[in-house]
Length: 307
Image 1 (tube, rainbow, N blue to C red):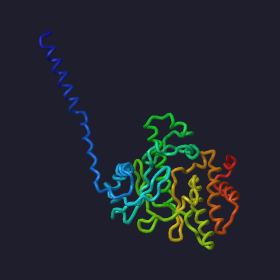
Image 2: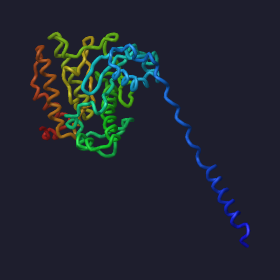
Image 3: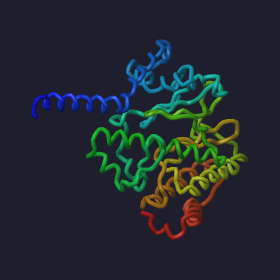
């Protein structure tokens, strides 16, 4: 008989749908809205309104996570990033920390980025390498979506953060890395109070200290080589001097010595710049010979890729 068949089938269909919906995982709870940024955060910093807004957007997370209290002074404005002195939260055990805030990708100079990035793995925001390796990131990124460009920006930042971690663990003279965000790094502040340490370029060292400091720089260079990297932009402008000691900074452009065919030439330039500085104070070495010896010690036959 057909009487009632239609209604029964309809009822069974509704019951099955109800059971399916009841057994399905519940929808995730809506994300908690971000806490409002305190109006006093970075309020007294002597910067433009646009820069203050950028600071508040990208450094407020460090405040919310109890790492910094406030941004108190701009230390250095470079083509890639600006460094700020921040009053540290007591949980850090420090008085001040440094926040390195990267510029927007559209504001960054990418004219020479490819020579450093060639052969480098693309890193995600956990510092993990992608499975594929972009041979010419500067060419590829030009044709990427906004999402791809953001990934490349993340990789640029994370190469600096992860290398700082590796170097600091090995006892290198680098700032201790503390935390990172999507556009910023938080690290040890090198200076006296809120006054940043000068760079070697701004210091007249004593001739009797030249050899000791030069050898200390080379020790750090060899730690980099042992990890497979060249600094890429090493010079007296990227070496701080504090209390008779040196500290190497600025690592986003680190060059993969095994994968980048320009690596040896970039490394030789690093050595030449450092040697030229210390020659001013009476410590003279043959830069080309030194670079050749160091490269051969760590990479052997790879030295035929220069140029």
